[in-house]
Each structure stands twice: as structure tokens, then as C-alpha cells.
Image 1: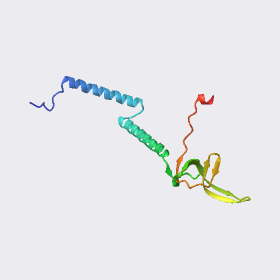
Image 2: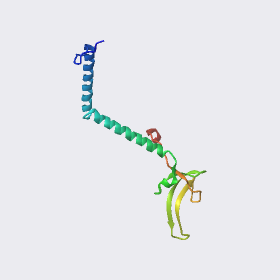
Image 3: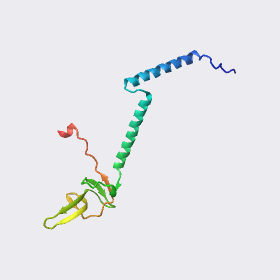
Image 4: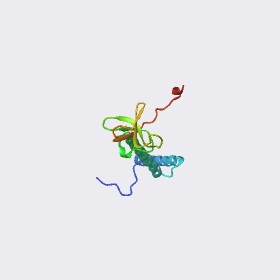
Length: 142
């Protein structure tokens, strides 16, 4: 078998495919420009950043659904889910000072057990953010 000469012309079918590819690339460049992108690289960079942002958000949402060590819980009065090894309830961190009759001072977790608030409980070991409210539809408002 003889190898083709280094500068030989491509076969007509191959040339037609090359022209079709060049036209398609030209169409893509026009579409990129119409969408405000200077190049395919810019589009790829934008899509890569969007993917990375989405992956980060998924990680953050997943993390929010896991029990966290109590040392990482907010101490600004935010209601959270609290848990020790037996009890799960809602509660918040508080610093209370009462100077009137029967003065007292308390800093720690206040837990909600139904309609009762209590500071006398085992210390929580873990916490989790409360879930958001369910979505409200127009039907719900009627």
C-alpha cells in the first residue's frame, strides 16, 4: 500500500464534511456572540462557575440537614433543633439576668417541651437548623 502524498487533496466527501464542520463552528460563534459571550472559553468558564456554585449550594444544604456539634450552634437567640442522646426538641441559647425580687442569672440553652420552657434538662450535644416554612399557595390563603 502506498501512503498518500503529504500535500494531497482530501477526497470530495471528506472536504464536504470539513466544510460542514467549519459552517457549524461559524454558527456556534454567531450564537455565542448573540448571547453576549466573546468566546466558547468564556461560556465554558461561566458554565463551570455555575456548576461549582450549584455543587457548593448542595453541600451547604446537605450540611444543614445533618446534626452539628453543639459547639457550632448559634448563640444569638435563634430557635434550633436540639438533641442529646435521648431527647429532641426546639430551643435557643439565652443569657438571662433578672434583678428584681428573686433575682437570678442564667446563661445556657432553653428548651421548648410543648408549651413548657425549661432550663432543667440534660445538656444538648447536637443541633440542627429548623426547616423553613412550607410554601404557601393561593389556595392556602383562601
